[in-house]
Length: 132
Image (tube, rainbow, N blue to C red; front, side, top):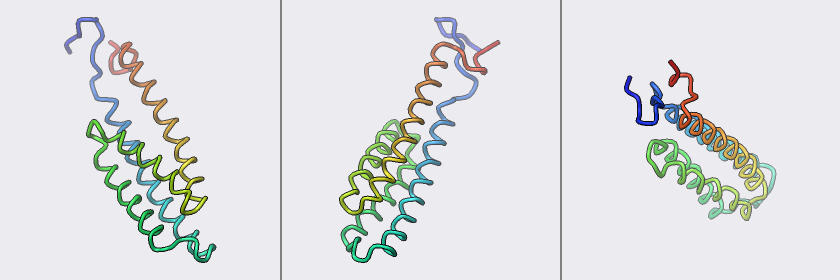
């Protein structure tokens, strides 16, 4: 394996590939939660969701599925985070959607901290695949 000029070997496998997989999995779970929230909100709050509100949330759920597929792209993470903000903004449709957005927002904060930690370890050569 070749070493970089700084003496740190590149990892044998791309650790960010696994992290992007986790991002995609969280987006799938978030999509399912949003669609299930639609069922609950429409069942227990009569008239809370009109046609426009339903359409907005369905489009948001569809975009979350698309975001799963584009996590490989450099802009994939940014797209997912914009959708997270959009879910929180859907609180104007129903407050439970904003609560769901805040909960998943905390999950995204934890994932971003994990990503930063892995990137830092990779830069310092501390990943197990970078050791001799």
